Length: 470
Image (cartoon, rainbow, N blue to C red; front, side, top):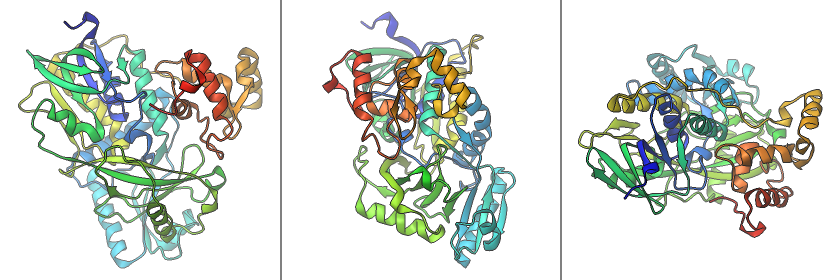
């Protein structure tokens, strides 16, 4: 017998940026919405380890869902970042060529971009490109300039969607891997972490596990291959190496190795693109790091690799259809999918959320939630305040006067807020993603014992039971 509290209108599987965007849009209607996530936190999969780029939309083939939702999602980002208090900057992107073949690719991308509706694209000569980006290689012969491209914090974007969804009534169940889905009349029964849930509709946003989820309800007509991308993150002292996102000309494997400033002032280089069998294989390799250094140096001069502070890898859910899979199943009514969401998935997330939610709400005839509040505010950050503002804030909240992470200037008060807020942090990585404690030059080397002590105290668990992640 399923408990009454476990009856929902919609169950969303997966709490990455797509699942959280869908959940937030669903909360605009009067309905009970559930999000089931196998990990201990939101943003634990593909969404936490990517290029953090809001692409302009010139790369995807015209007529594809990738092109449609990339351009729509890009246009939504100014409003989304304001509503959800998420760092976002339109810094522009350059796709650079170093040969006649590359020049031809640049012209092709320009044509694609125009067909996709990307505004203000320009083709620059090599000299013109170096005028706006002096760090470019002397070998660059031409470049496509896209001023609408931007950079974002993928952690805060995902958390913004999720926390705003909770504010509007969505229920999240973490540490709840879905292990079975059964048809139950005109709805579904889902089993997760020993609990049973009933939902009128299911939305599969499970990333690299999307095909596995589909197997529980219908024969998959697609495959998902995890594609590992390795990255290098450099210290903030290297953040000024380039002022735009710099791409090489793309290949069948993806957009290639990029060099970009991050929204927090670091420099990032990546990714590689390697198909792997294990959907949890996020190891970095010597060969991969070597490839990053070699390929990035072809397009950008004098990258200060001595300032690398960490390397990491993420997995992209690459489908065999070549496009996003966004649909209601033809045979299993009220089963919806947002699958094979690889690049430009982060850029497309706001638009995918709207599209999927509309389809679900129409199918269930859900009414508008007149109490929906689109605003979410993040943790107040000392590093964003003036000296006067900081002093005044510490008077009101003395915990903000105790610095825990010196590299990033993160206070105890910020860490407490990260733990105590909706969907609060329960792990070291959870704190790190919310307020950047441990993101700096020492990579948690000095602050982690103090963060562990705070988590232990706040969660009421022994010091030795605090985890890095789930």
